[in-house]
Length: 464
Image (tube, rainbow, N blue to C red; front, top):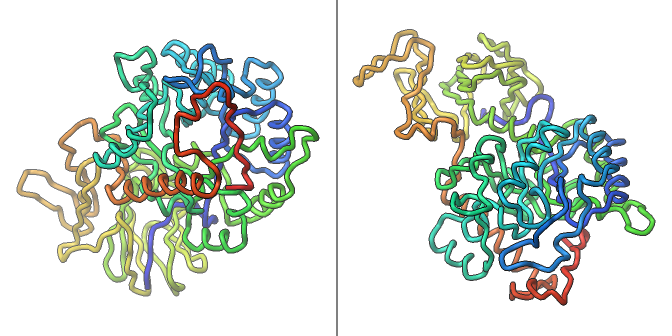
């Protein structure tokens, strides 16, 4: 029987979250949309600007139409965001303002959010802001792709440059755990970016990166899309401008939007939550490792905190299960109610299991397993006798240990972005741009956005 360790906590089969950009939002539209979301229990991640811009966006600057949008300097909006926060919505920064933000202003924005709307460790970069970190051509690491992006990109972003007045990398490292980067058309974002949230050692000021899906919300709520997402134990991280689902004149909500939210919110097998909370779950599961032989497997929790409701997906149904993990058979899944911090637990099964996945390995004949990870090499000993290695390191019976990494800076890393995965995400991003140029009327010349006589038009969600 095939088996794999999956990320959602029981009883969920999939997850759904939204990164909602605040560009051009009005208080009235935001309230109309989020009153409905709250009524449906649909918690999401909403970006905000604490302050009005004092500078234009980008070097060279984009038109002033990129500066539109309500800020937390409006007391009505601040009070409303506080009410959303109290209901479990995540409020995160889209930058200190819609314009370029020097270091002091970014620091003030972080402090403002901690004081009024605490709890978010997510950040979403805005457009071409000079304070964006590792942005423009620096988003990719492969030299050929970086040169390609650099030919198209003409803006200077320097949030990671210590010599820049826009530097805030040290603040980011202390306060932010994930920043949105690549976009994809794939409804199951996790399928295209299974390593998210991932750490890139070439971008040390950012603790983690994640991707987002750029599609219509109604596309992701279609019956086939929902069924596929649950079948694959997937996660959709949707990129949106949600206020636009409320008409600016009447504030009436777009009917397909209402239907999609109701469909997703009513599905008991989809975990709908904020970006920060779902990324924390992914990180916890990245800290789980599994070794197995035919009728037994061991799970190692390398985290310093418990991992609740761990699931193992099965291709069939087990008849019996035992061991010290308290595992329960739930239809086509095994559920471990909790794996304690730093624990190694075992499960025995009546039928033999064959596991798949990067953090699953078959035991060798001595009942030992090793996992090379960004944190170092994990050593797991499933035998009843100690594992004494030639380098003097001993792993006790039924225990695990670390062989430390060569670089201490890697110790906190849980996941890295493989080259093939980065290439795929970069091609997805290029396809999104090409699709908009070929079929949606987007200009191939980026200089068109630098013409102050033109206003950047708002994208139509229903055209995504």
